[in-house]
Image 1 (tube, rainbow, N blue to C red):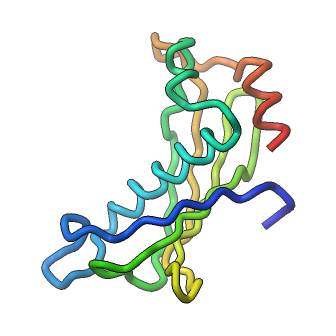
Image 2: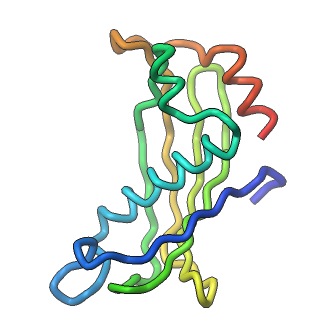
Length: 136
């Protein structure tokens, strides 16, 4: 990891997020990545919803997750999020989900996002948004 700030949010594993064995279903980690992403943008001082109101969307174009150790019903997990890469039309965020008590890594991964307008056309990230991300 480089010197970029890391934003953390802690969640308790809900029963609905687990399978019959009480283990977190793999797709729920992607939901937690989204929770981390929202918190990351809020911490920058710009809620993602505000960008959408201005007509800029950041859909996920690629996702990767490496599962290392499962979380279980009732566990507290911490989702850590940071900016990995920033380009004129895209950004990549890294994530690490840890057991909140031990700090053990459960899952690591990333999402790549393309800046688009409401018509689905790729656009440059607006200058003010780019500046905000570059400062992070």
